[in-house]
Length: 228
Image (cartoon, rainbow, N blue to C red; front, top):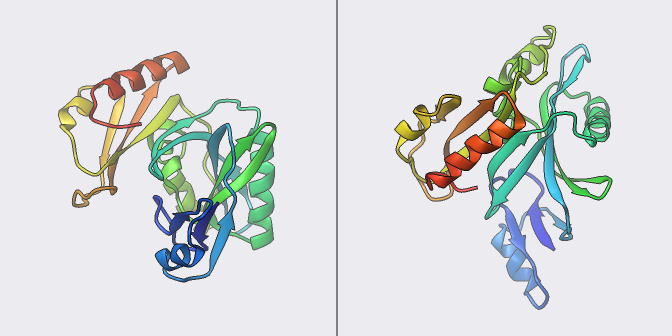
């Protein structure tokens, strides 16, 4: 199982894997002896996340699901999915959470897909890393819609404008000229000091077709500048 802090966990922080024979007290001490959730390991097919937004007056909008790839507990790649069969189910789940909490702003829920089921993994009450592709890849970014929601302005369209994916830059900054030399790549740097395991920026790749997107991601991966 995985012992997780109930709040403020991210990028693998606040988590402790427990295997048969491990000392449970040591695991609890490792997360700071704070209130926690014990989550059984799941043999899932993929992880997806949905970014949703609800305004003060109750208007809601949903972005397409993103498929996520993690390494060492840190998100590496999020790819926007077009017309995914699990979209209606994910929207139903997040809609019920938004309404039950009378929530205002952007909310992200990560799911494990197991067959036809979606099992909630984590929830983030904010704009979320897996939704950064929306800056260049959607009619209205998650950041703009968050502001529209809390100001009770009409929400913008969440429709994708292309096939898009977001790749995180983690740890140290590679040669940015490679990213800037790609025709449909968009570089975002956060102004953070490089540090092992730290997200210091991301690259969004946007293409006209799914095949072109995969070709660009393959090219990016072959540079060895980013791991995913």
